[in-house]
Length: 58
Image 1: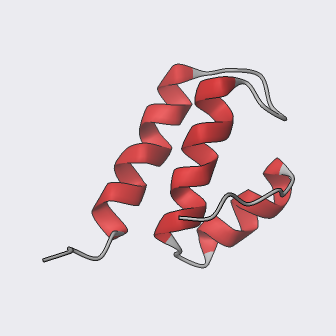
Image 2 (image 1 turned 45 degrees about the vertical axis):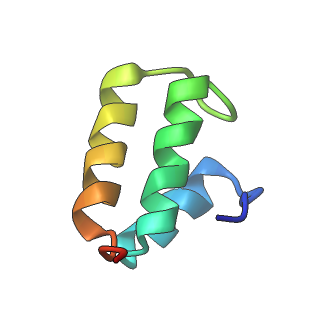
C-alpha cells in the first residue's frame, strides 16, 4: 500500500468517502503523532473502521 502525504483534514474527508486505506492512514497518523497529537484510542478507532471496510484477500 502506498503512503499518502496528506493533512489530517484531507484524511478525514477521504475517510468519509469510505476508503479503507484512508481510514488506515488516519490510524497511522494518530498512533505515531504525525501531523496530529498522538492519541492511541482514536488510532484504534480508525484501525477498526479500516479493518471493517477492507476487502478480504484470498
